[in-house]
Length: 64
Image (cartoon, rainbow, N blue to C red; front, side, top):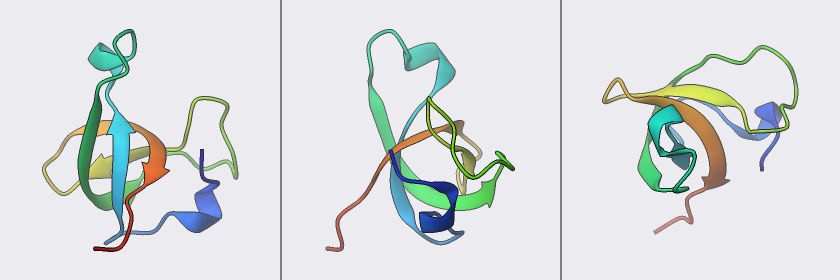
């Protein structure tokens, strides 16, 4: 999982939302706001996407 320093608004990421934690289903979106203030978190940095969805970053999306 990427550290907070690698995540910034406008970046496309894959997150897992709280209600998908058991299944591990990922949601892809663009970061609007970082919600975790610490540099790292064992479950991923929490972010809000431009769609309003909130979750923890599991991976940075590849540049397409």
